[in-house]
Length: 184
Image 1 (spheres, rainbow, N blue to C red):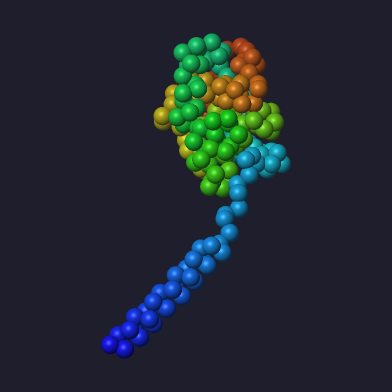
Image 2: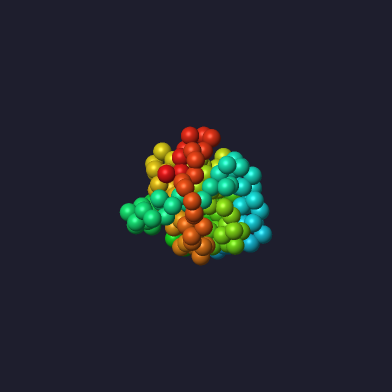
């Protein structure tokens, strides 16, 4: 009887020590560092510069085609398409803080940053259509038509960057690009 009690006390003691050690390990942990709400302007500028290096020259000259600028149906679809394809990473406010983007390295582009605002719309078209290797940006050309991508570009610039890139669109539609994606 005494040996049974003695074993029970040893078991209880060992269990208490293990539980205390486990609690101390959990309680002693520090929470992960918080993720800043927005990237620093310097980081976003460098990020936009790296993205622009990936964009072929022909796209850097492209503007929103006038036919897209006047397409009210595509314009009405753009906010819903932003929420569906972009907001999970770029955030509802376009500031790069979407739940799906916080773990990405590099972080999603902050569309509210002046570095993005000053970038050419053709570059945004290229990145949305073709994605960006080495980042979490997927190519959306298969899911969106050229018109929808251009309408999305216009929406992103107007809504988050405060720039209406369609205002700069003048003249005939751009010629087809070298990779076969037309700006219709």
